[in-house]
Image 1: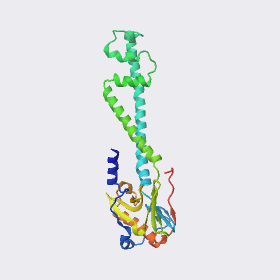
Image 2: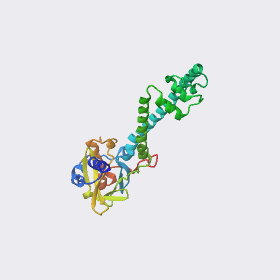
Image 3: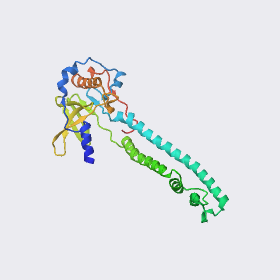
Length: 290
């Protein structure tokens, strides 16, 4: 099962070799023909691919941080809010039910005496009050047994409650883990002096000189391809997915977004920072450690 899932991820998401890719340098003429768009202090903030820029380096960010801020955090907060609302609803139901149960016990005491729960002639429809007896307070354990045994809709309630419990137990931990413990992925760094693109993943470096950098697209995901060595020292490629627009994480970037992002990177590499921006830039750090 694990291998099947791994193969499916390899098929649909372009981060694991082998991947079809054309050389980025092969599109240089078309890229450099894109009209100049030199950013200033305000407009540079809206270049979605950019994490950092100076005269020597350009740090290209991936889609991870955007996906977390737009998708993971709101969805997780929504799920947790739903859990809290359901817990509050359960607490309200319990209070109402306990009042009804105590009223029912009061009727039994009135008709059959204080020791009604010891009587053998108690009607079958009052077996639930026998279970409660003279308890002034109904424990959670006792309430749950009563809820799932003596209610007319006990079976339906049990199925619904277990379904919601399992749903929350299965969904919440992965989302919380992804928000707080999933490692922040490294950017793709363009070093103008060395004329290389490089990044790293799980302690392994991946790099390529400008003429070797691959560029491709799969299932509307644009990626750049750099290279490293596997455990057997064989050359392998890795796709880096740049955050070319606000919607890259959802695979909804337009062709224009991708073209402008590539033009920015190549113009910086070949012509320097002055070809793309008047100012240095560093994106604000995240509020928490990722």
